Image (cartoon, rainbow, N blue to C red; front, side):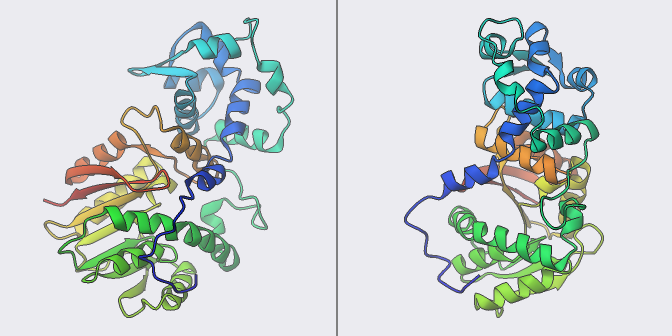
Length: 344
């Protein structure tokens, strides 16, 4: 978290490196669907809705949604209305009666530990345990440990330097004066936005122990005169007043839709008229058929958090449902994008 000019971009694009890390669970989800659920052989015979898929396979809706989005992004199924049908690729190479079937090629992965972990997530609908010294806790519980929080926050911080710079380059904050970074981790996104906008100050809203980590990181970047840290739980505590921009960067995808609505409603209720909310992370396209890199990242999220990647249409519906208007979406960098809306 060393200090340097946050307005200086790298000459190269790290997106391919981010994709390896972001998509680490994708192959295991595909293998689980083939060797444990035999999903694609069944779909090759008859189209089905997500509800019917869940009932047939004995799996939960949240991970099933992620799995079917992954299948869409890889050209294995097509979504028509609320039904999924197998493509020729699926029928020829994953249908059990096809002469080109590859099921046996995947069979050796049946007892792979991560594939079995994915099966548990699919069956229970709950995130798995974090693979570390916090093996008994999921990500949300693990973040309450100071040691784990330092490790995870540092990981997100180093990624956030590039992603925050790309967001700052695309987000127009002209005339905005105070930004509230909700669940802002190390504060790297607030730092990048403040560095790029001379008239902007910011507050990072985080709960312990991450709030102290943020204070240290912001101080190291010599931005503590423009960015303060306020301790608080984004679900339970009132948001600080007098901010005309709210940022939720890599926050919504950690939570299920009811929690997403709670966060956006709290933001709407505490922003002034004309206030701007910015949701920044990996978003699927309108019909959730891709992009493939985002569909793959969603497998990580559903495995270790209570969320997943959301489609632009899903977030627009929630934003408009709580009262926001003028919902816009634009690409930033590293397969990330931003969805903005204003309080009328």
